[in-house]
Amino acid sequence: MAEQRNLILAVVLSAIVLFGWQYFVAQPQMERERARQTEQQAAPGAAGLPAPTLPKALPREEALAQAPRVAIETPSLRGSINLAGGRFDDLRLRHYHEQPDPASPEIELLSPSTSEHPYFVEFGWLAAPGTNAHPADATTQWTQTEGGQLSPGNDVVLSYEDSGLRFTRRISVDASYMFTLTDRVENQSAAPATLYPYALVNRRNLPVFTANWIVHQGFIGVANGVLQDPSYADLGKENTSRAFESTGGWAGITDKYWMAAIIPPAQGKMTANFKAFDENATKAYQSDYRLEARTIAPGGMTEISQRLFAGAKVVNVIEGYDSQLGITGFNMAIDWGWFWIFTKPIFHAIEIITRFVGNFGVAILLLTVGIKLLFFPLASTSYRAMSRMKKLQPEMERLREVYKEDKVAQQTALMELYKKEKVNPLAGCLPMLIQIPVFFSLYKVLFVTIEMRHAPFFGWIKDLSAPEPISLFNLFGLIPWTPPHFLMIGVFGILMGITMWIQTNLNPPAADPAQARIFAFMPIIFTFMLAGFPAGLVIYWAWNNLLSIAQQIYIMKRTGTPVDLFDRLRGMRERLRRGEPAEKPAGPPD
Image 1: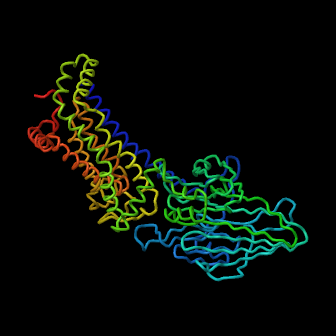
Image 2: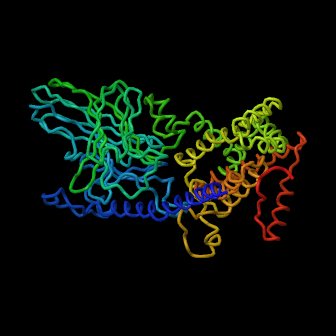
Image 3: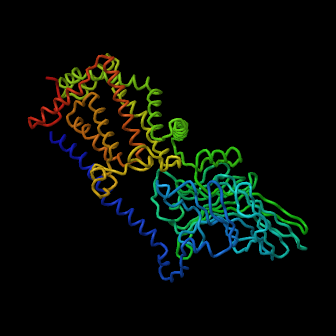
């Protein structure tokens, strides 16, 4: 009995350590990291060296007003192109807001280099060594020569001349998030000119965000069909770089839902580079590439077409660019994860169902029914095995009692019993094994696909990709207090716990009293662990449990196995009334 008490105590203490670590260690560390990122601009330089003087960051609107601009207005984007350097440094996403409330500010994707959080894209030309020309680069002052506001079907043309070289850039944009830049260089001088086309995405002073192993954030690109995806921390910790060469492909910087990516010609040979470095005491991250040199004879010209994706990672849009524009591996921009073989079909199934029902949450419920029907034969086999195991429980208890001093003989006798009755004691694990990849894949879908972001369900759930906003521990919003993450147990979190408890009590009870007590604690532990997950996932888990309960009761009745759940509940009530433990210790039958 002492060993059993120690085992139960170990389980309880483990749960306390888990929740205590989250509340007292992990959460304060996260707050300190947020503070560190916020104060990063004022960080000192290396020991023994003076810190570089930082130019004062300007409010975004003031930074935008520092240079002449070409306006951008599309169904998906609004912003402008900076004529100083021809930079894309002002983009907002019209369909996405910071909060579920559509009146909240639009998502700001790109920002000028003099703003608080610089994030910009630049295309240009580098001069070969020995070339006197000053090609188009970050310091170029472009002039708009054609067009007005950039919009789908309305291109703009920029131009620039230096040392006998005339640069002309035509920019077009589609209705989603793809820009096309066609650069022409004419050599009007008496000497040949050798130039290298380049493009870069630069980001500095990252805004505060929560890093998560579930989704990739940082550098991203594809080289020769292979994904390249170091995180900010991978290169930023030691200010390192990673170079690769490729024919075609692309490179950029991605967040959870948004991305800026530069795309060379499909057959262009690029030398790409991801790097992290300190710039004016601020951490900077840059994804860039340089294409092969182009030599332009006197009186000759060259032309190159490149693309820029800057926007939301909408699945259908990303996959459309991959197939229609022939951008190799562009669909890898969405982090489907290791279980992509489940994740992608689950997403597309939810999306198709949503077209008919108009609600992602309802679509998740209907998809769960479909998954249960799909695996019904396998689950039925499992539940039948569990029912037979439940019928064998008295005989199993008798054998354990007979051979309690000889564990080897006990196991041999039990295995003979399983063989005689054609029962697999592990068959009851199959439903759980089936659920694990589906559960994780749905979690991934809810976490990484922008279609789920701010998708409402009903009532208090305004965002299926976020945890329930109410909790048992603040009386479901009646108390003006936000509990720590692990105490955010909402209505569906409670339903999930209740259905898990019912499932546990429908299964054959463990013969070992210590194991029985551990199993009794599991629904409580899992409720605390899972209730803070995205609401869509908790709804799925509770609904899936409910369907499993109905299926299990149906199979138990068909196989003649008594459904003694209500008898157990009445027994628990009677024992509690008498002041006895709620669960009768498992043991030999009376």
